[in-house]
Length: 273
Length: 168
Image (cartoon, rainbow over all chains, first blue to last red; front, side, top):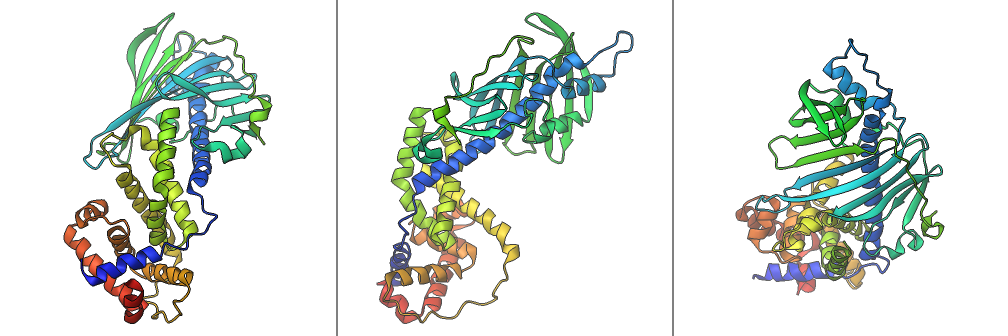
């Protein structure tokens, strides 16, 4: 090591010796993580409810015998009508990240479950970053939306309270415009929508539609299952960004149409403000 | 999840000081450095459960910090007017340690961004040339050249006498 390098090392050390005492990375990180979690959860929540609400709405879709709509019309109607029934939904999405320098992909599926009553504006969402370990994420009841802050070292956040409360703005309903990646609006503008064939599940039969949409180098593709009552049962979305290893796969399933939904607010002493 | 959070919190507690020092040299300002480290930690936290056991979280966080700082810089540069030349040599009294620290950071900020990043990673984070090259996506030869030019520029900005006096 030459003299100039030695001098530089010392100078750079000196340059970091006047750290202000108020800087606290750990506490600040907890706040930053809380903001990030809230933002991402809201987007995810809005996104899935956008799909769920639109899909659950199929009671409003009337498929007249003898004048069956085209595949695209039935497909779009199922995704955009206003929901009138309560339902349960489960979303599982897998994001692949190229996080290591050797290009190896790493995968971690995440799941959220939803109980929704659009008419009464009720919702309870539980999410799990680890399979099977669900924690409350979002509750909508009594005109308020409560978002849970799932943070490490969060004791300084929100005065030690875990739930952030905001006034609901009719958020339990079709909110296609706020879909996080814009994927749903892209699905509605699919380049192709075709009838893939009959499909059935436990207690229902229906039709499977296949769709695809290419936007620049990004491709949206998947299937939508609609039962004979016109209710969406499954939505599969595969989002591929060009030739990069980034990929997202999302599966949404709907069940228990018309079943009652009970939602209670979080304990008042854990809510901020 | 609790286990993951505990391990991540322990990591932040152990290593944030080191990364904060690197960040302040990249940004030139403590509060900007704090923002950079926190934003980078949030990204690291998202990927934490997916990090392979044999991967070094320091290396991954360093990469996030450099990329984040670069994207911030790109978003900001249009609002700034390039000086076109290096600032005048610093003549202030170096007796005050705080003033010296600020002056060294100011001198570092006068370097082109890539040069500053190379100097910081080589002489503050103590990374070998090959690792800096991998992180920045360039050749080790480029790192060597940039480091040499960066040190010469620092010496010029701070003044040779002061550079040697306070560098030793």
